[in-house]
Length: 226
Image (tube, rainbow, N blue to C red; front, side, top):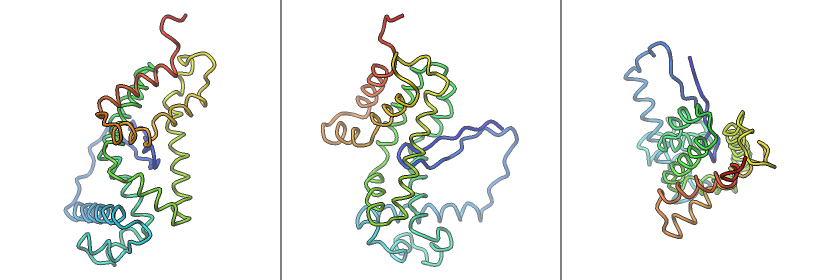
C-alpha cells in the first residue's frame, strides 16, 4: 500500500491519504449510521462553539443541537476536546487538502510544490468558516486544548518542512530548509488570508495567485541567476 500523510495547516491533525492495492471491506449500514451520528454531533458543536464559545457550551447543549442523547455524545467522543479534533478533521476533509497533497508532493520541482502550498492554503482558509477563531478561543479557556493546539502547530511546521525536503538545492542562496519552512509557515497564516480576502475584498483566486508568486519570489533563486 502506498500512503502519504498530510497535516491540517493549522491544527496538524494527521490524516493518511492512501491508494490500497486491494479492495476495502464494504461499510455496513451500522457503520454508516455511526459515522453520520459523529458528523451530526461535530457539526452541531461547531455551530454552538462558534456562536456561544467553547467554554460556555455544554455536552448537553451539543447533544440537543445534534438531536441525540448526551450519553451518545459521551460514548462517541468522551470530551469536548475530542469534538474539536473531529471538527478540525471535517474541515480538512471539506477543503480537499488531502487529495491535493497526495498528488502534489510527488512533484520534483519546488515551484510546483509551492503552487500546491498556495492552493491548499487557499482551500483551507476559504472553508474554515470560523474554525480557527474557535480553536484559539477554546485554547484560551482550556489548558488541555492549549497544549493540544500547541502540538498541532508544531505538526504544522513539520508538515511544511516536508514541502522543501529533498529540494533544498532549489532554494535561493542563503536559505536552508529550516528557514524556508519558517517563511512558508509565516506567509500562509490564516491572518493574512482574512486580511486580504475578508477585509480588503480580494477574491480567493487573487489570494492564491499572489501567494504562489510571493513564495516563488522569496524562496526560489531570482530569474536568470546561474
